[in-house]
Structure formats: C-alpha cells, structure tokens
Length: 137
Image (cartoon, rainbow, N blue to C red):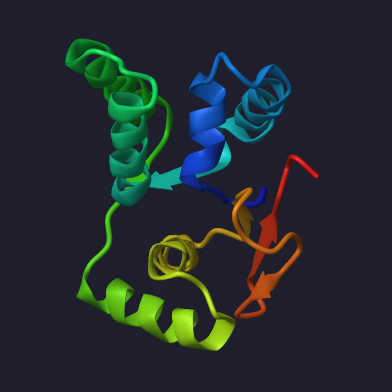
C-alpha cells in the first residue's frame, strides 16, 4: 500500500508560482509522483487562498477555480478540537510553531506517513509514524 502524503501549503504555493521555476518544477513533480495518495487540509487551502490573494493578486474567480481544482484532485481533511489539542502537544514536544503543529496533527490523524514541507526539519520523524521531507533539498 503506498504512503499517504500530506502537503504543506508551500508545496502548493510553488506549484502555482511563476517566479521560482525550479521550485515550481519540483512541486509539480511531487504532485505527479504522489497524485492519488495526497491529502491536504482546510488549513492548507485557507493559507493558499491568503497567498493567492495577497502575493499573487489573483481574482476571486481565479482563486475559486483553484479551490475547486484542489477539491477535484485531493481529499481535503478537516480538523476538530481534538486535533487542535494534539497540535498543542506536538508544538511542545517538537518545538513547532502552532500552525505547523496543526498541519502535523492533521497529517497524523489522516494516516499520512510523509509530510512534504519546506518549512520543517528535513527527515524528522514524528510519533514514529510521519516523516517530514523537504523535496527541495
């Protein structure tokens, strides 16, 4: 059974980016390689929308299309209070920022064994289950 892969927001940002072609190529390759095994969360979608609005200055219609495209290709996981409490524990144990810990908690709750992220420690193993991989290294 293939690994379930959780994407941090930065992977999707680079996939949409036109400024950093090398990282765009790596991000697009990750989407192709892991395809049907990828999971994202509502948090990731919200963070992406914020960047698409502020940095990319896309229209609401273009962002709506991006959201619908993501929904077509990937399961979008939600989180609840239990996840947020788990995130607080992970924050303390691994010295994460809270929103990074929430991504990690959501990945763990969704049975992911790989978390693709540029922002966290490459090859760190969380809870003996989830390995953080920086695909840009």
